[in-house]
Image (cartoon, rainbow, N blue to C red; front, side, top):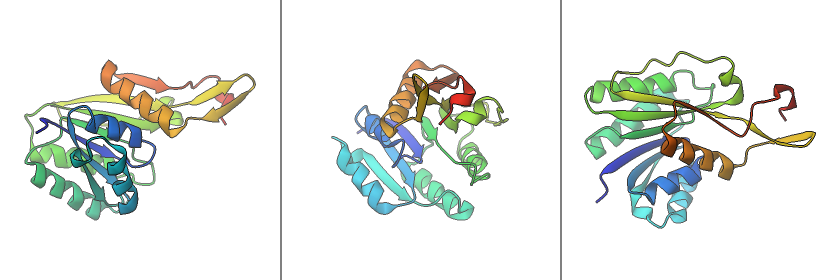
Length: 185
């Protein structure tokens, strides 16, 4: 039985590699994604499929998202030690729903939040209030430069960067580069 518990929001797409890595490195992983078929495919990518649990819910639907997270906490009987959250701006309440639910469930157990954000957030940092028992870290998604051209990050590059951020324990990291800004794809 694994002792670590991770929750990955948006973990069946760009973060699928990070979800699989967590499952293969001692975590019981609950992955929030919109599509049940992608969540099932994710399980098939892991050497430890029994440690990946899909939660098919769209985080843009606040009440369903809250309900899905509540069911996870009840099933696990505790809060996750690690949360990796890639929530788009189209769901402005989802991050606070997540944090408030974890805070309500347990105010004493320490946990870490890896908040994955788009490149523009690096220059317009938002205030993300977290409880005292939360270690908050940001990961910004940049781009890759190739001479006079650039491209967005691949899913593998994003997952690798998030894995590095988990391991490094830095408060802030950038995957790829953010400069020069006018070279963004």
